[in-house]
Image (cartoon, rainbow, N blue to C red; front, side, top):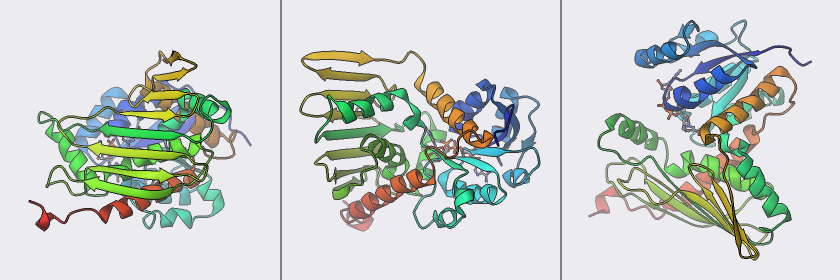
Length: 341
Ligand SMILES: NC(=O)c1ccc[n+]([C@@H]2O[C@H](COP(=O)([O-])OP(=O)(O)OC[C@H]3O[C@@H](n4cnc5c(N)ncnc54)[C@H](O)[C@@H]3O)[C@@H](O)[C@H]2O)c1
């Protein structure tokens, strides 16, 4: 039965994306009542309190687990923490919107895959940009033209520039690399886009590579792969973090009759076909529009109006599994540290 009135949600993890995107989206929404926030960091809690005064604050997120008056939680925690928290909240029959990747490996994700179907159904994965209208537009072009037929897709995802003036950011990214390469963290989004655009088709990993430009990073900070789809499409994917300069960040799609370019940061979309270039630029900020839409989908799920999380655990696992296959194939070519000059 559908719940009337706002759904009661708590925000767990008050770090970078929690404060910059999830909290503002939750505060903007009339369909959400923010009933709690949690983070072990005192500074983070203090910042969040200034933005959402009067909302009950917790040091330990598990205080919200099974708590009366909490229909669901948004987990904006690091992926090595997210999986265990998601499992606890799902076992307590609460709804969960969990940041991507849902785990740092398919083995780590196992506690979620062994939950009952009913509990799994309550989990939405934060593959945020899948909700952007630009992706829907691209999908339409792939389905009905002008981007139909075998395609060459290139995804160049370069982010997290090394900034000597921001040691906190650098420490956070170094810490994340201890739990897997960029293909794992960024790949979650890109492999979800590819699955969305290509109707769930699963590719073969024909080639994979990795480069460690800084000997002190825990896993290679540049990764890439060549993916081959049965329909004849090839995707060349590249991911990179922590270099002082970054190449462009974009997704391009080339077919016999058209060429599309999606800006990786703004999602400004251009399509060239029949000798003409059209630009599709959404005036709303990409972060705002995507986090609002993502939260809207979660509200539908929690309120009982939606019967399935989109994207849910299956989509999160599919992206994770492909990231893992690429990381595994690429490590074959990684030069052990002692052999590097
Ligand atoms: N969807 C997106 O567009 C997007 C963008 C950036 C990051 N992310 C994802 O969001 C997640 C968080 O990234 P971030 O950059 O905000 O990291 P962050 O390190 O800035 O923030 C994580 C926060 O979680 C808190 N935390 C850790 N353990 C906790 C626990 N047990 N209970 C409650 N809080 C806990 C930390 O103290 C920190 O404040 C990552 O999985 C990342 O991949 C998603």
